[in-house]
Image (cartoon, rainbow, N blue to C red; front, side, top):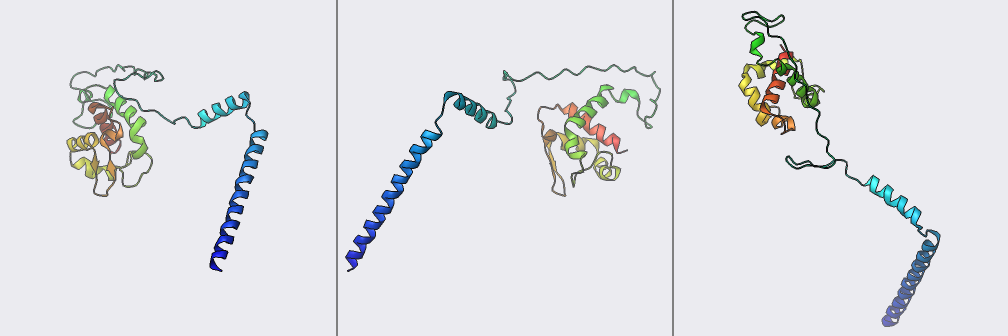
Length: 191
């Protein structure tokens, strides 16, 4: 009797699988008839698919020309009149002269670098990051010396709170002088 039950099970199982296969074939034929693709709709769908699946960005490698890349706009040099020798610039603290900032463009370059990159962490209230203009947060860092601040900004640093500062703020294209100018700008805001 057990063998009869097994044969009946396999016969019923085969019938069900056969009916499912026939139903799938019928549905496939109906789908092809109803959803037949004409060339116009196929081209529209292909364009929509290409638009929605295109990459959000691209990788640019230094030294390689990209046909879609636009050159960065040139930054115009600013000319600043030098004060008379021995005079202190208005608003300068004791011991600093206009000549101490070797090029007055240093402050401009520092602000541009800060606005373009540093602001994303130091100007948005990110926790455990010294914020622009926060004297209390910058005092212990400035006490270590400007050379230490420059080294941390250029080479990267993870503070005692565990928040990492990526090298050059995460933009390796920045020059050391640009990073130093940005550090000077941020430290100057906290005085």
